[in-house]
Amino acid sequence: MSLDIFGGIANDIRNVQSWRNSVTELCAQLGITVLYDSLDEEDFSDIAEEVKNFGQLRLAYTIYASEADHDATPLWIEARDAAMEVFQKSGVNPSTFKLEDVLQLRRPDNYRKEILKSRLGGFVNALRLLSQDAVVAVALVDGGIHRVKRDSAINCVNEILDSFILPWDCSPNTLYVFGKPSS
Image 1 (spheres, rainbow, N blue to C red):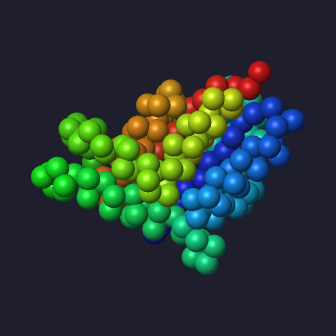
Image 2 (cartoon, rainbow, N blue to C red; image 1 turned 90 degrees about the vertical axis):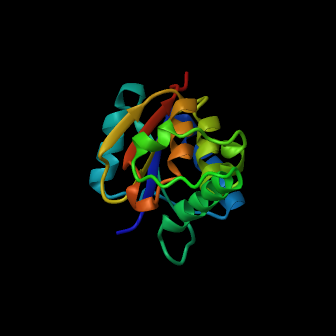
């Protein structure tokens, strides 16, 4: 298996092209490949169902580490390497394979700042910014979606950033939904 990262944005239909341009530009700046409308029917339906109370799913995307391999796993590995380095520099060698354990770890003060420097950390943080005017969904899964978390943007993004300490194949397979509907 490999890690899949996909999601969508529910917003006003008049803004779809603007959102697409924003995500495209973001991914280009981070060196991430993005494809639109390439989700399989089941994943698209899962996301549409979770955002339906906030509006119609207008933009669906999938991201990859590079155009050549169509795999998001290297993005997670890069973020995890950064996470491990931060912990190891603080004298801690976390060895955990469950999200519940990760959420209990005391993180070094610079942990999230350093993780944001990774491509995946930067992407997730930018979704937080985009969610100020739309409802954003992002799934990071090895297989299928096993959990849905609907919460504030900061809580969802922090949980995602914190989960990077896990090996990619131990990710919580979560679809995160956050943001506010456009007016």
